[in-house]
Length: 187
Image: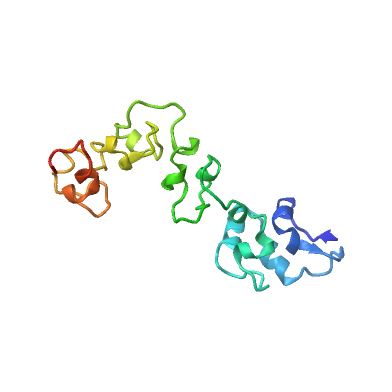
């Protein structure tokens, strides 16, 4: 078997589709080679293996297609509970939440600082996308960020008539205010 003008980076991803019984360079590659293995960049792999289409017209789409079996988007499926899978840009466990937005990632190194900080209270800490105080919540989802810019959860932000965290709820109508024991204006 011979790989027809296929970059080495493509061999692991498209091996099934790119193997040809002929080593004749004058023989045009079959259509499935052109559609599946033309480019093996990570972007192309993601496009081919997660677009909902049967790109090589073999009756199989995306991760159901053996051509995509080694594509990262198809192989990284399972519990989103380790630093690698919580920092890869995919919803590995299929629950609709990605990386640090997924509750199961909250306690991984990908979603918290290397050193535990006593509180997550500054504007910078409350907008950095990680759990600085290691309590399982980050940014505006952490009650200690209530007074930070862009968050709700402090008396000053829960009595100003503004939806500070942009979730569609204002002041005491926002659980960040009404369910926060640090907020007195909603009691």
